Length: 207
Image (cartoon, rainbow, N blue to C red):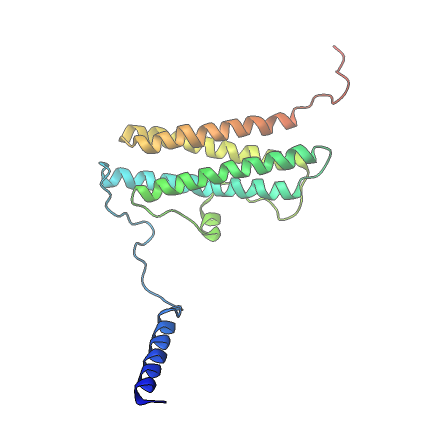
């Protein structure tokens, strides 16, 4: 091999080695948080910091409770039993998907306001006011009762927080709570509550 070819091959090998170094993942990186939880970053949305801070705190509570309700729907979707299995299995999964959309909308609103949204299950469990169901399987009427109670918790707090947001001039948060959270939860509560109305299945009761 000529010296020229040797130098050319050595250069190619160096280039390949340099290329492989660039493709190597940089693992185990650690650094301080770029924004601690509970601190707001400035946002040019024409809302005072104290207004944004109150809305962020309220929305994180609604977020924690919505995530809990969402997960409860999935738990009951998997574990439902009895002669209404098919319709409840499908209904619970549909409501789970709709609650999941709410979760994303609420979390994005929190970030838009300059806050930090709750995200991890442990933090949600510490924050939610919805009672924790057992790990085991329960009868369908009990599952439904738990869901209706959770809906009512969320509706009460959402209405109160929507009024506060409106009074503070945070129309975006008010709209999210009224148009999305309240209306979705009201509709779902209606659909679920009708499954525990005690009416005959085949023959009407005598007058």
